[in-house]
Every structure is written in C-alpha cells, then in structure tokens.
Length: 86
Image 1 (spheres, rainbow, N blue to C red):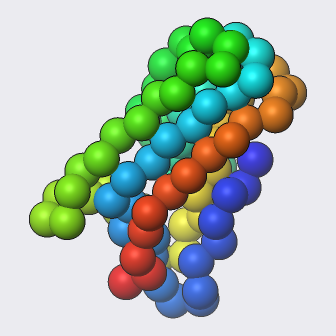
Image 2 (spheres, rainbow, N blue to C red):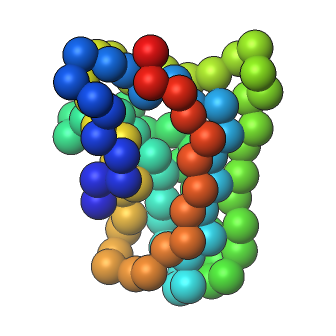
C-alpha cells in the first residue's frame, strides 16, 4: 500500500508516523518495495501505534523511494505521517 510518493529527485524525511488498523494485523512502514520494515508490530484491532522522532531526529528514505504501509492482511487502516521532502 503506497502512502506517499515524493516529488521526483526528492527523499521523504519522516518525523512522526502512526497507524490504527480496524482489525488485528501485523503492520510496518518501509521505503520502496524491498525496503527494511520499521515501526513493525502485531497490532490489536483499533489500537494505535505511534512514533515521534522529534524535530532533530528522523528516518529517511532514499531519493525517489515511496513510503509503503505493509500489512499482513487486507484491512482498513487510519494512518498519519509528518514528513518533509528533502
């Protein structure tokens, strides 16, 4: 599930990320199709998983890498990401 596609020639710098699935699921973010999973959790239905790195710390993908939310099954998820394109 691609969430954000950066402008061509830019990378996504993530400062905050969260997800809230409607059913129990394993969920994680990653950059690009083969990227390493991060903020990975087995989540109970209607639970919130969130990580705030703050203004001076972040996680960043490579140039032109999309942000993906990887799910173990098809389920509706509320998600939120604070990011900058750099």
